[in-house]
Length: 138
Picture (cartoon, rainbow, N blue to C red):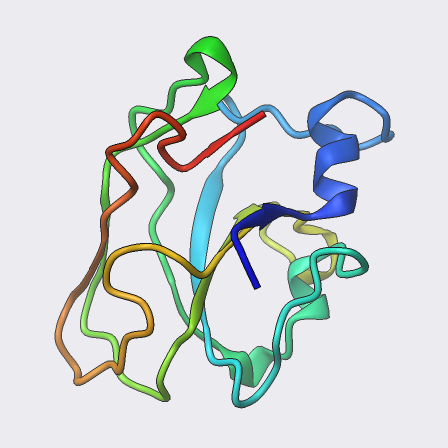
C-alpha cells in the first residue's frame, strides 16, 4: 500500500462531516501499527477503534509546531518513548478526542524512513519526510 489519507478523514478535513478536523488546533497524534494483528484500511476505517487495540503498539505525544502552508501538513518529528512490542509496518495519524471510538483517522503512512520497525524497548523517533509533501499534502 502507499501513503494515503483515510476517506472519512478527507471528508472531515474538507468540512463535509459534522465532526471536522482542524490540523492546527486539534490534538493530532501518531500510532505505530502492527499489520500482523490488523492492517488499517483507508477506504473504510473511520476511527482509531477500527484498528484493533492489539495492533496499536505505541501512541505518540501530540504533534507539535504543526503547519499547513500551501496545503502541506508538517510538524516536528516526534519521539515515542520506550517502545516494546511487535514489528510495526505503518504509522497512522489521528485526531485524539480521548476516546478511540470517536478519534477520527487522518492519514496512513507506510513509506517513511525507519519503517518497518521492530521495537526493542528504546525510543522510536518518527521523522517526517523532508520532501515537498512533508507528512502529507492535499
